[in-house]
Length: 329
Image 1 (cartoon, one colour):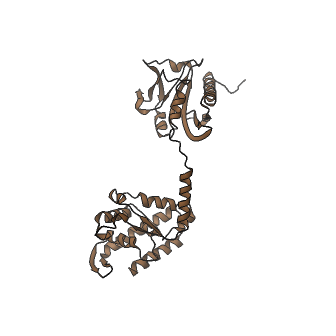
Image 2 (tube, rainbow, N blue to C red):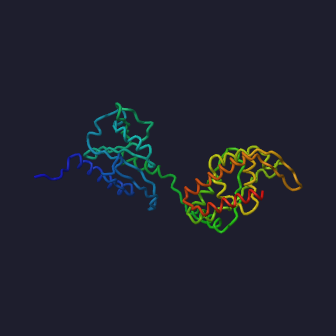
Image 3 (cartoon, rainbow, N blue to C red):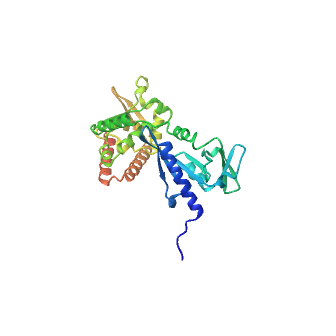
């Protein structure tokens, strides 16, 4: 008679994991999530840490090996656990800490080690080993080691409330002026503008309503005797922002005179003539530079709109608005 088989190795694995699940529930007071064997690629399960009856969301990966054979390779200070090479990248790419646990069949010896690539050594071409210290015992110091991984559990409620309040204020505002810090300029960082774009991209409605809504200024340069367009580091920052693909044309307010637009043109185009009137400077720009400026920024606009699946009607509206502002400037 032919029937499915439960091998002794399969049974050992089930006994070991069943015991460990009981240990997690009873001694750690945490939750054990078993990984289905069809999805087991080197991790048998995850411990979800509970602190003061609060489920933290912190997950600890575990690889459980049950059987006397795992204690056969003895080192001076512990046991040599031999793993497969294919698991190394899997462990290193996993966002959770990984612990390797060995348990003998009488459960007299139950030891652990936290996986650390710097503590591994090769075994031939396809395997590696790590020492599991004798003093690392499941019953004594495993709990402390595991909960050290949860030392950064935070209460995000206040941060969430602030974030939602900011989003609400932004949604209710038609005009937004972004303050670019001097640190951002000097470090050639675009975090402020990228954070703004990410915030505006939380959903399609918010993103569409945020078009043609911003201008920028540089508050830490307000006491500088030079005009903004005369400050080289700001001009370099603006030009670099265009080169890396910031979709200025999508977000710039083209419905009125826009300081950022004028600065972007100036950072990208050579001046052929400049005139100073009582209240402002008037510039003529190299036509080929202006052509490249428009091509680059419209390309950034098209990439951004395609990425966010925004239709041609809005694209045309923005394009007409930018061209109209350019003509009047």
